Length: 315
Image 1 (tube, rainbow, N blue to C red):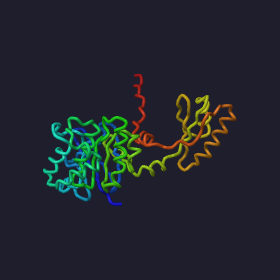
Image 2 (image 1 turned 135 degrees about the horizontal axis):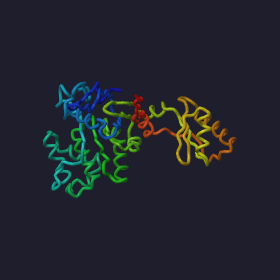
Image 3 (image 1 turned 60 degrees about the horizontal axis):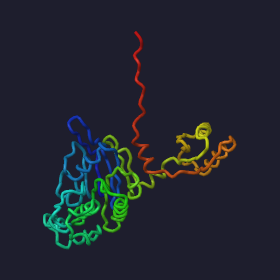
Image 4 (image 1 turned 90 degrees about the horizontal axis):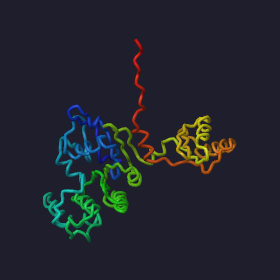
């Protein structure tokens, strides 16, 4: 599959601060790519370099094969962006706002109606933007990004501030977008649950570096399986599981035993259940636990363990 977005050792330094450190990412065509990281991890800086808004200190970025630094205008024609749902004239209607952008980039009038239909805003297009909810403004921002049918859409926190219904609507819309329009979506967000239900691929950036990238279903399958156990005595259960070679984490009412990659989770569940019952530990529930995007994220972006300070030797 061809790459819609590709960066090689993309780097950006602000004086002494290295905001983006050698990021090499690949976003396949017609993917929904979740771009994840903590605040300050380098996500927004990376997006701005992809859009040609700031120049990299090093490395390259390509949009549909066009080098952003060498041909910023050519790359800009390949991408639509939503960085925030602002910049609209509140006293104008949604349709009139879109028509202003259409005129600036020289598109036919029919393009406004096309994008309004795609984002399901046709019936509200005649209302003043000042009367729009935040969710409607987000959809109008998406419509503006889609003017001219760019093959790539870059969206920064498109569900930010939305209520649960608005988030669910946006999730459905974004998941269906590649099939409906053929576009590739690069989606930056901190909502792991929403990304897990929307994205086909993910990239995780931590302290300016891309620490993990790939197809989400494959990344989950590659992780070691886990067995969750609800019991009346998590302390004893954890000790028994540890003695049998499991790596164990404990909560107030359950333990989670990590298996070795490729190990049969069902067989391990049965063996662990047998050992607990024989030790008179009541087992209320036991079984394999599906790996989640949150688990993947925590594993690759967890801070290193803090080492104790060395105490000076007495003189």
